[in-house]
Length: 224
Image 1 (cartoon, one colour):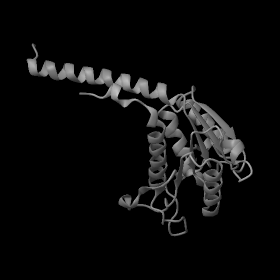
Image 2 (cartoon, helix red, strand yellow):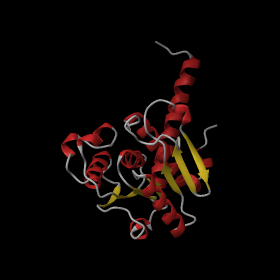
Image 3 (cartoon, one colour):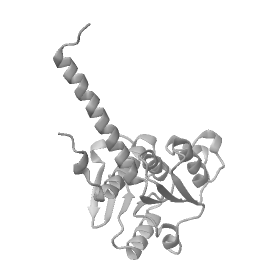
Image 4 (cartoon, helix red, strand yellow):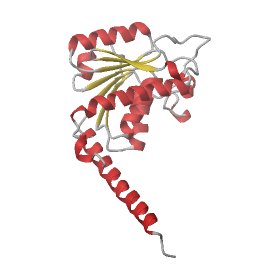
C-alpha cells in the first residue's frame, strides 16, 4: 500500500523530530555529567530528588545522612524492603548504581552540622536541603548561605498530608529557593506521604536542573 504524501511528510517530520530529541538528550547529558549537586538528608525529599537527578545524568551527587532505612520509610522514600537496617546513604548509592552505574555518588554516613557543611559540600554547585526538622533546615540554610553567598540552595518546606496541589510552589529569596506550600508541617493529622513528598522532591530536582542549565546553549537545539 502506497502512503499518501501528507502521511509520508508527517512520518518523516516525526522521524527528524525524534533525531533532534535524541541529539538534545545527548547534549543535555554531556552538559550535566560535569555538574555536582550536594544533598543534605536522604529521606523522603533527598532520596527521591537524588534519583531524579541521577536519571537525567548529573555526573556527581554528594549525599550525607546518618540514619538507617526503616519499614516506616518505605511509604515515601526511595528504598526497598530488603534494605531495612542499611545506612540510607549506602542504600541510596546502591539504588542509583542500578539506574546508572556511571553516576558518581559520594556518600557520607554522618549527620550534617554547621561544623561539617563546608567539608561535605564545598564542591557542590547547587545544594539541596532535604532535612527533617525545621530547626535543622534553618541552621543548614543559614550556615550554607554564610559560607557560599553565591551558591544556590533549593530547600523543601511544607510537604505533609495530601491534596492541595495548587498550594505547592517555589519561592525565591536571592539564591534560596523554597519548594512546597511552606505551611503543612508533619503531624499526627498530616503525615508525610509519597504523593506530596515526591512532588516536592521533584520540584527541587527540577529547580536544581534549571540552575544547572543556566550555562547551556539551548539555541543550538531549538526546533523550528
